[in-house]
Amino acid sequence: MRLARRAAGISPSPTLSIDAQAKKMKAQGIQVINFSAGEPDFDTPEHIKEAAVEALKAGFTKYTPVPGTEELRKAVADRLRQDRGVDYEPADIVVSCGAKHSLYNALQVCCQEGDEVILIAPYWVSYYEQVKLAGAEPVVVQTTEETGFKLTAAALKGALTPHSRLLILNSPCNPTGAVYRREELEDLAKIIREHDLLVISDEIYASLIYDDLTHTSIASLGSEIKERTILIDGVSKAYAMTGWRIGYAAAPRPIAKAMADLQSHSTSNPTSIAQKAAVAALTGSQDPVEKMRREFNKRRDRLLASLRNLPGISCNCPGGAFYLFPNVSGLFGRKFRGKVLSSATDIASVLLEHFQVAVVPGIAFGNDNYLRLSYATSMEQIEAGLARLGDFVKQLD
Ligand SMILES: *Cc1c(COP(=O)(O)O)cnc(C)c1O
Image 1: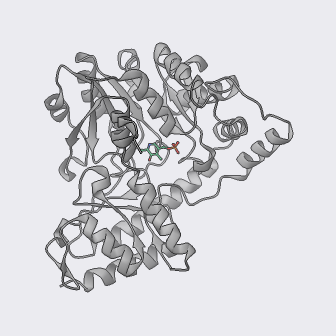
Image 2: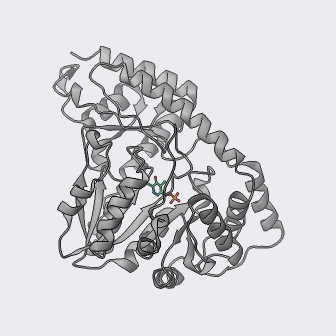
């Protein structure tokens, strides 16, 4: 079968496929501890579900405006003003079928053949594929534990060429949990302005942030940088609404219009009743978000403390999101039942096959010295998983 070049070049999402494999093993009755999930394990709060049920009963089941209802776009703009200190009109907001879709639309309308898009590794898997789908060239800048996995101004400068078009920022970051401080963003913003770049700021984990850290949106650093920023967010992570598929972009008007026009020929509006649920999420009580955040915080602390006690494993303290990103290169060269472990991929497959623990190897994010462990799972599962990880390390020669 001849497929288009575009399709033949796509790699499937490795995080989704590991999660699918773990779920399949579970369905077969195997007691898998799943640290690979990329979604909150909490249920969607009741008042949000109620809003969708009401919308359904009221017959709110037809097409809506392509970029989302005025009501929802206003709710998004209000929340961005209140939580991030950035001023957008509803007309600057485009609601899509998940933040992933918002990112896709943004890259499609901003980038083309010959453009370079700077990705900060370790990066979220879909950025890389979406940049390629837009015909542009991903330029990967590696970061290290020493800088807390954050892009420095010097590293950004080093990656620039006359073809540089756009930078993708993700704070808090999936997979590293890195959170950029205001001054760090100011340094980056200066270069972005000087070199006439655009920036996509993926802020999907903005409300899941720990310790004394706070979230700063790069768009809030002044009108010059706001005019170059496409801010991406959604309800998936903050409100445990991954299945509802509502994400949004706040962008300079011409970009927002182009994204809506593109969407008008692909998905049209996101699901009408999910939009009503998203309005309830954004305008209702934010207490459920804080409750989930606190629980994630406890789990992070528990998992981090124990991981750091395992010989051969070190781990940065993530400031946000719900992932740990331990360095397992200290185990490379050790043997499990005669087989030498030489990458995080090797370790992840031994863990899944022999210990029924699902984790994502860092290769999925551009660096195979690390594993990604999601703590979007219960404390009981975390305890059980830690015991198995301890066993694994003990059994190494
Ligand atoms: C989960 C995630 C998204 C996409 O979320 P949607 O469910 O599509 O709204 C985007 N960016 C990052 C970094 C994520 O982890």
